[in-house]
Length: 325
Image (cartoon, rainbow, N blue to C red):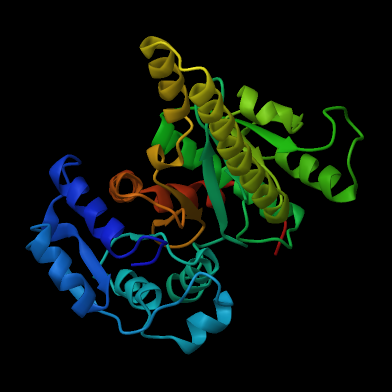
């Protein structure tokens, strides 16, 4: 029940998922403070959605690992335990990202053969969505971690965006051979030896042009990219709003601009999957709207139906030439 607008936005998102997303209400398990959830469930007519009480809350600014260890009765921990025990098939949250990653790693555990889980974020480009991995799950990376990110994100791209052979690029400061340090060179060699469609180095401007379907980078770099992109979108949107206030456009122009910005809305993608753990885990933006929560729930159902985690485990098992963690 995490997020800036929880629990109302979460429950309204659940209601949308049931009403327009085709989700069976009996398949949803709401985890949080029951006294806060019951009135909203009644208001939104969400019966027979099941509620599991969790008394504690991990705030957005708490240290992740310590909070997960000390707050065993938080909604994140209790919900993750429910998935681990088989009571649920997938986990969805717009709460503390670090806490979700920590709880998933400890409670669910890594998929067989996975060295480090990674967060894969769909980003809009000129040619459709592009997956950027990792955006913050692991800021201390090794080349073999990025090799596995490429394999896992390729499988996710197949599952969600129906691309049979996703093209992968390694983010670097130049596209020429020899650019970047030893870490980049080692990762480049591993990706060349991997069973993926590897295009080679790409630069920052190539991401939004849609040069590749999957962009692989360290978690620190990926998180900076994500936050800069979010800030830039907000800045450009505000500039357009200010310009429209001074020079009101014709309705068709305003409609066209609004449609263009709608295609950049994170809510359309719902959430970012944490790839490499034993069950689907979707992490939403802290500001997730009901529409974003609905799309997270629907995406989680799709990943369960596709069997993404099984496909990832099979691809990693088939991968030869990997390096030990």
